[in-house]
Image 1 (cartoon, rainbow, N blue to C red):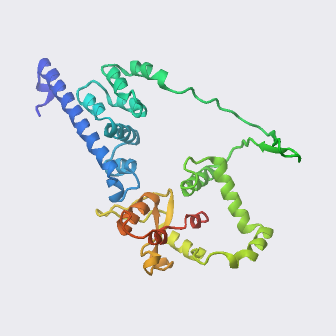
Image 2 (cartoon, rainbow, N blue to C red; image 1 turned 60 degrees about the vertical axis):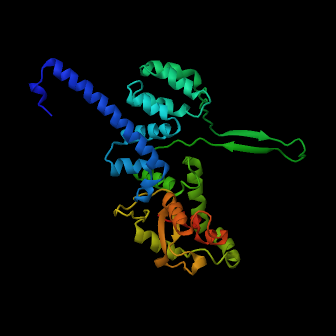
Length: 318
């Protein structure tokens, strides 16, 4: 490419026009390929926990760039006309990302056609009537709600909600975020009250003297298939509290979310629940390995069940 300083005004503007067109075409191709890779779950096969992590770690995009491109790519899989309009300059990447939440509507083709050629504010005005009214945020502070079943002649049931407000340390915040990650398979939206209650109940079950006494009476009735706590701790320490999946190019998944214990050799095939036959996998990679080992419905449901993991065993880990 010639040094821009040596170009005339007309040559410089012409060059910019050409480069802008090429950039749009390249972005179209990139999003089309990204959408197909996402559909095939190729990032997970390469050792990444998600397409987002693949874009950030593998493709070196910023988090904001990754989010917008993934959103646009997934929308393009459903509505290819979005990417065509992007390549033609009728829609920007920002416009496509704003249209993405509405692609499942029956009138999506009409909305996309009306959005072409409009700037961001005009598109926001176009989409405004389509957005549902936001729910009002309700803050409850120690409010007792009386609920009575007309068929029940007993005393009314009182439900109390309490609003907690306090300042905590950075260490507390980090611990909460860690707990959210570990419990993401149970509470995918990370509701703080559910997460804290789960952690506190688990602590009480293990340390409250009365509960420990009660649990001791029922230990013999528990299934012998549960993995020993010492084994779980050893696997956790060995794998560093992260998914241990390594892709064909040597990329190890670094996910701390939705971790599950996986039997490398299925129990139905003679695999044991010892440290050497267990590993930590995030749910996407555990599902991928299950499909690889068991196939898509080719083996019996008993074998599939034996390959499954006891996710509850992980909640006690640090």
